[in-house]
Image 1 (cartoon, rainbow, N blue to C red):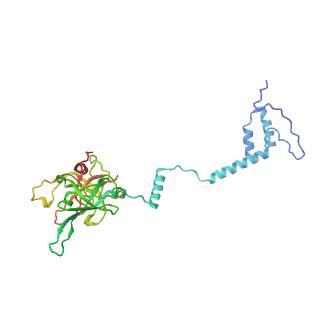
Image 2 (tube, one colour):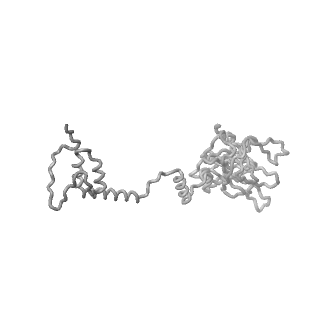
Image 3 (cartoon, rainbow, N blue to C red):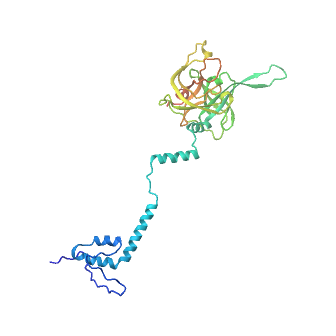
Length: 324
């Protein structure tokens, strides 16, 4: 019984052969056709339909040659194109390094300094003195001490060290934008060497510092100290927290029977006379302490790597602010 054909049942017409058209090769004879035609012939149905497939391949040899040539051309083009490579973490790191080399980002210390600078003030304690000569009845103000302060409330409330303004009859402050004002002492906390000032006139753009708790402060945390060392400033120095809950007694207080300062933050950011009262700041720009003292076993009042700051919790309580 004859099997049903697996190709289309559409009617077939025998092709008219012209004088230039070669005769179809006999079944089983070798025919010179393109590789694509050979592949098509090999894929043809077996047995009785194989001869008919060969006849079709022979009739359409030219289109098959064209199709094969196009396929080879596409393959060649693909071979010449670079292969797509998977982007790795090394590629990303290299791109980031190249970008930073072209436009370096500011350091963490620079960002912290920029954040705190609008709140830092220069503090000068003045002593009024009368000239004894009759030809000089006027008063003149003599500079007595120099230090730093930090604005903690935008109404002009400033934290500084008590020893910066102690005994002064007049206090002057200079804000970051250059505005100068007289200030008054509104409260003091001698046990922590802290004083709270209030400026009598304010700049229009006054900004108060942001304070944060020292509860999560750890040795090794990066900090900056901002102030006016020896009257130069504002200046910034960077370092780390060296220790917590330290004690310090000033050499001037050795024979006075006063208690040492306690619960201090020890740090190694450079601080010198004039830094007193300035803020100790974390890398997020938040104040965690008020610089109060430096340790130097010699008679020189210069920094050797050990500074102390009063925790901001103590400082805020001196200003009547709620604890953190």
